[in-house]
Amino acid sequence: MKAAVIGCGNISKMHFIALSGNPETEIVAVADIKPERADGMAEKYGAKAYYSFDELLEKEKPDVIHICTPHYLHTEMAVKALSKGINVLTEKPCSTTAEEVDALRKAQSESGKQVGVCFQNRFNSAVQNAKNILNSGSMGKVRAVRAFVTWFRDKEYYSDDWHGTLEKECGGVLINQAIHTVDLIQYFGGKCRRLDAHISNDSLKGIIEVEDTASVRMELDGGVTAVLYATTAFAENSDVFIEILTENGKLRLEGEKLFVFDKNGKATEVQCDSEIVYHGESYWGSGHSALINDFYDCIKNGTKFEIDAYEGGHAAKIVAASYRSAQTNQIISIDL
Picture 1 (cartoon, one colour):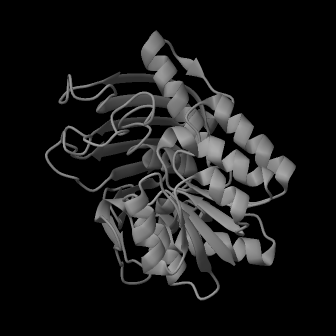
Picture 2 (cartoon, rainbow, N blue to C red):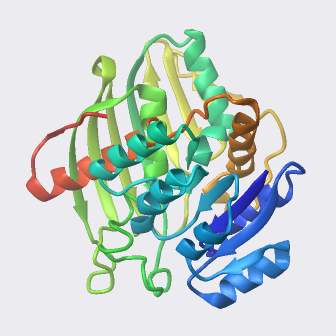
């Protein structure tokens, strides 16, 4: 299958690595508004370079377009590609507002094409093991979920033309870093129905327009409570911590490690299925290649990719509602 990658910045390398390692995919085109980036990736992977997304759409007809651009462009580009009959795999967030999520879902349904959202941490071994344990019923029902994202971003990280801006990044730690954990919270605990959120800029006042710290309390299906604390004002990129309290104990994920606690508090570590290989930063997780390969398998086999505009849009809607809650100081109800 023919692939095109739009946006040749930092995260795109995860897509290039996965595509170049899949014998059934061919990278035919790349695009970036910075010619040196597009030219470099085109030369490395034997593709044609474009400096405009619209020109690529006009001259190429790939089977899949990978969207690795700044957040504010994701939905617009995805909808355009779908209207041309092209499958779309987009980096998170798939959308920056609830209205954009609805527009993307409509485009997916009308096109009949596949949409995938890169929540690669769902493919981490520890996450898969935790989900299987919960699905088995051995731990009983989920009662509550708590999660902590404590990472580090300094002013250098925001020195480009889009990170830290309301116009292009459309938010800070919630929409960029913690949205992966938002996705996992509802993956484990159920869909969010109401939430109350607070955001602040604790460490980079005058440098960025967006939040570096957020806390969210969510009410999930079945009366499950979830709390999230996320910040990029810490001193290092620590392992993401997620704890799932159940009727018969709890599950604790620390990075890519999983521990199961019985009712008496005795912990057992669940071993990973295979050796973990990181192609990028370890805190990005190890699931990108698995997600991308699964997406292509779904297209090939005519089966539905799980994290599409509907499933992948849940986290985007939760984040958008969190911003509304923080701005209005109100509890927000969500229609996912």
